[in-house]
Image (cartoon, rainbow, N blue to C red; front, side, top):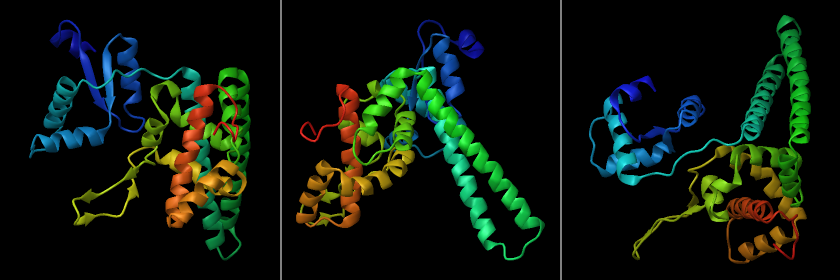
Amino acid sequence: MRWLAQHTTGAVHVGLEATGIYHEAVALALHEAGYRLSVINPSAVAAYAMSQLQRAKTDPTDAATVADFVRTQTPPAWTPAPPEWRALQALMRRLEALHDMRTQELNRLEATVHDGPVRTSIQTTLAHLEAQIRALKREIRDHFDQHPPLRAQRDLIVSIPGIGEQTAAVVLGELLDLKRFTSARHLAAFSGLVPRVRQSGTSVRGRGRIAKLGSSRLRKALYFPALTALRHNPTVRTFAARLRTAGKPKMVIVAAVMRKLLHLIYGVLHSGRAFSPTMA
């Protein structure tokens, strides 16, 4: 911000690439200081650089490309989600990390043949991780209780057969704010669950795949709920039966059901009404 004050006058539009969590502190500081800024998907910047036939890739050229992208493409302004939503995201991502660490330790325990200090150390670590997971789950429940609007949205999502409270919490933590999405398809695109079709004339007929250009956490969170919904959600069962009749493979159907669940999530959150098979 000192650099901007020294080298710029008037309105400034700052562009920065999304870099996991590393851009967030900069983005928040600039937003709070009153600057207009855009957080840009790195894939969009890379594609723009290719369209300009750029041959060099250095920090200065990358910065110039981001600036040119902002100047020519005018990406939308970024606004931070409310603090309680960001806190929920941090809690859910920490819970995911603890589950991953527990899985790693369980694998090590299974691979340890002999009793001794190594096995004892692993068991002690597992006990600590279990205690941390239980404590964090209590924190997450308390967080919802302290923020009724969040709890109301969680309850709307849970009304969809196949989706439980933990999945609903992950979804809300990754979406941050439904107002960011203009439609259910926009939400599905954010999750990377829209199909990518490769066709050209009559000679190129590439096999369709999901785009995967979005939140991998959302896709991971929706996989097992999709399998549950295939058994217990009448709307999803009818939808999947139509795809099976059309000859779609099993995993294509599962991916389509994951996308269908996102559409239903958007529907209940956008309308503020619990799931109803007739409405769906």
